[in-house]
Image (spheres, rainbow, N blue to C red):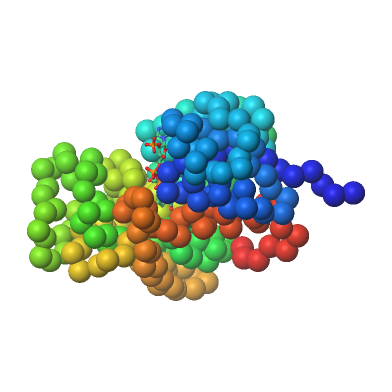
Length: 269
Ligand SMILES: NC(=O)C1=CN([C@@H]2O[C@H](COP(=O)(O)OP(=O)(O)OC[C@H]3O[C@@H](n4cnc5c(N)ncnc54)[C@H](OP(=O)(O)O)[C@@H]3O)[C@@H](O)[C@H]2O)C=CC1
Ligand SMILES: O=C([O-])CC(=O)C(=O)O
């Protein structure tokens, strides 16, 4: 007898959430779009033609859905995360940096039998980082370069009165640990948070953030030194149409991460 489909609740229909919800509607065997949470219901119904399921508050997604995917602005992270975990659901965050600031949620997941699954998102190489962590990792570092428009408005940029207009050469905005960096760039460094969680943690993972007028893509390079391997990898992400901060691959990574929850064959660590 066929197993029942797992239902997915999607919080936020921005660049990431809309793409994931559309993929679920188009059909992923074993998964179904169960509910959505949005501010503008009419816009959502237009984006998701044929979706007749409920539109609910972010807190309510976990009442009926097996998996809750968060694609909200970072400030709303806990609104959806906490109830989904209390309801024992599988929670898939995109605003991963917020996990560092709401770390108690990991213990909460353990207590409630829930799970937090962080997709690789706009990054590369978390499979190798996780494998290396089973041995000894000496160092992990990441350099992020984005077109200035993708960094405009970040709290760090605003608080330090940094002007990104008319830059003619790369400007180093931040250098330090991932834990120190994320609060200043909550919509830019989710990848760095994910890297740190896959490897040696946010205090030991080093980070540089550059506003670079010479790049058109959101570019992340990670460098890992471990007893099992040394590797350097770079990903150059096409910014999404709706949000220049977010790489187009982010939604595709979330879709792939959902698929591996139900696929009979799973490849990769
Ligand atoms: N993990 C990773 O690798 C990456 C993570 N990210 C992060 O993923 C998250 C989603 O990114 P992205 O899709 O680009 O973000 P967007 O800003 O495009 O989308 C956020 C959506 O949330 C909606 N929203 C706002 N308030 C509410 C509310 N109260 N209830 C329901 N929906 C609401 C917005 O609606 P409205 O349209 O009405 O404003 C918008 O559609 C962000 O935190 C981003 O930083 C981004 C890139 C990579
Ligand atoms: O999309 C990207 O390149 C990375 C990003 O914004 C994030 O990690 O928040």
